Length: 151
Image 1 (tube, rainbow, N blue to C red):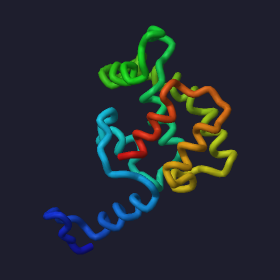
Image 2 (image 1 turned 45 degrees about the horizontal axis):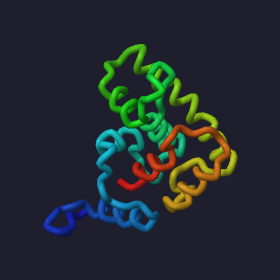
Image 3 (image 1 turned 180 degrees about the vertical axis):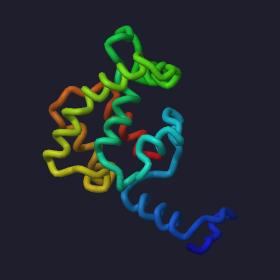
């Protein structure tokens, strides 16, 4: 790949093409203040080519309040607590419980024929799909997904 100069930033040609592809898919390149980008890149590293499983798990872990936290805890507070936890039983329990919430959502999306993020694009379609699911979802689930997709 040859370097391309764009806004005084040198990028590889492949990266510029990827940015255009993501824009066409309905994703914005504004940084979400709620969700640090480096964590999202670990959670959903292949972006549009990644699975909905990884996206839904990333969303659920960010808005789910596990049973061991008080009912007054918000999803964002639970996520901040989760991120601050050292590796161990409590962190694994949080991941497990959020996975249990994500599983039926992922299963229903897969049954509808959606496996990869790209399959359900553009972003507005994913949001509509999630809103239409007749499954229990954590508070703020759809908004959290929108925030993640607006990276």
